[in-house]
Structure formats: C-alpha cells, structure tokens
Image (tube, rainbow, N blue to C red; front, side):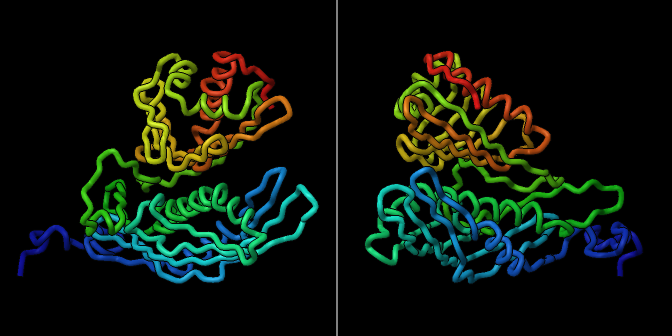
Length: 340
C-alpha cells in the first residue's frame, strides 16, 4: 500500500472539501430525461408563426420519446440526448372568405447529440387538402423558428441543467469543458470552420432577447438584397467585409472580424436566419438572429429577432444594430425612414 499522500493524485480524497469524486475523476451521470420533456414542451407548445395574413400555432406535443443525460468524466461534461418528437399545430388565414381553422402535425425524428441543429429533420403534414397552404407556411416560416427553439433546448441543457456536475477542488477555480458524445465517437472528419452552438463555459450567462422594427423606403426585394448582395454589404459596411457567403451554411465576418457567424437558413426575399456573435462575447457563444421582411403600402418593414444575447452586452448590441446596420443602410442607399 502506498504511503499516505504518495498515491495516485487522482484518488487523494483530501483535495475535495466534501471527499466526493476526487478531482472529478469518476464518471458521474445526471438524468435529464424528464427535465428535457418539460423543457421541450415549454419551448414548443404555444409557439406562434403569424403575420397580417395568417396565424399558426403549435398546440401540443403528442409524442416526446427518448432520453437525455449530462455526464462528468475527468472534469469534462458530455451530453447525450436523442429525441423523437411529434406535435399538433392549428392555423387559419386572416384574408379572404375562408376563415376556417385547419389542423396539421409535424415530426422531428432525429434530435440527437449526433446531429448538428441544421441537420435535424422537421416535417409538416396537413390533415385536409385545403390546409396545404398553411402547411407550406409552416414549412417556410415555422421550420426555422422550431429549429431555433431546439437550439435553445440544447443550450439550456448545457448551461442550466448541468450545474453541480463539476465539483470544486481545494483552492481551485472550476473550468468546465463541454462536448457532445458525437465529438468523441463520431467518425466524420472535423471541419474546423464549423461554428459551435453556445457551448457551456466556466460560469452561467444570463441571456436577453432583442426585437427591433424598422421601415425602409424601398421594395422588399431591394432591402433583402442589401443584406445578401456582396457589393451592397461592402457599401453599407464601408468595405469592412472579410467574408460573406450568403447561402445556407455560408460564413460571414464583418467590421474587422468583430461580427462573425453562419447563415443557417435563407428564404429569398422573406427571411434570413443566422448564428451571430460579437468578438467580445464569451468564447464560442452564438446568438440566433432572424431577419424578417414584410411588404408595406409604400415601404418595407424589417423585423430583427435575436435570442441568446449575453445580458451585459444587450445595450451595445441594440445600438450596434441601429447604427451599423439600419442607419447605415438607409444613409448609403437612400432608404431613409423613421425608426420605430
């Protein structure tokens, strides 16, 4: 037997104030299944997809089968989750004579730690042929919103549920490294330009959401191109563009690399969804941004929805959108209109 204090340092219990799991060496598992079911219901049920012409709403989750867990091994957090989700939605049109409410369903068969959020399949169904128009609306506008909520679930699993799995050692500051099981066992080659989504760090961040409205004296197509055409982006950023690949999966880097991210969905002339971060944010943390374009009588309305903004950067982020995007686009192209 080794002399006291001279054994394998991984097993020196006195390094833990409560003599529990010394140096966080042992595998420790925390079951997240029921928490995940409750959180997925909270995030998805009641979600509305609407504008002046229609309203669709997710009414219930008919199936939420699977399991999830958070695990600590050697002071690293590993998250395992696999879910098959089926739900019900209802929708109706606000225009025309037919104001009938139609029902439909959706299915998410592969929400898993083995898939990136943009690889998750979301399929919509309509119970009657007359509801096909609403089904297409759900596919066109609802899919990205649902995908955003699924990304929020993954973020909260890593940031909220996992608390307490990494135990402090004597005179040691906790540093938490998180990774999904796919990063350990996945045989796919590593693509170093791929953006991580909100991986947990050493402390819990509080988040805020941003929603801005603005109107522009131009057509919807013209405003959409201001965000997608490379020459126009160079114009309103004063040529401060390092990278701008405006397509699904494409990356962007603006304003001396202070703004970076990736496009996750683009619906021409209607919607742009992206992962977006500012350089001074906590490392590897990305917010989700949706740009929504709406036709007006003689102007175009832009709605900016951003979730997952670190609270300490909220005011600066709002000011940045107004100054470096909205006001700059108006002054550069002459689309000036009063900010709402």
